[in-house]
Length: 62
Image (tube, rainbow, N blue to C red):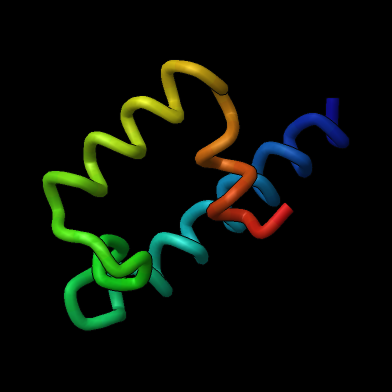
């Protein structure tokens, strides 16, 4: 049980850390990828529908 809680805390920390980096950039995550917000939102939504977990893997750097 302790390992599960530690793993969940670590995962949340990695995701939040990645989100902090993206939000700190001028223009946020869309600007980091060189697209506008609408295109970025469509791409993220499509990716999440086809491959659940892919966005989290990308953000965490795996």
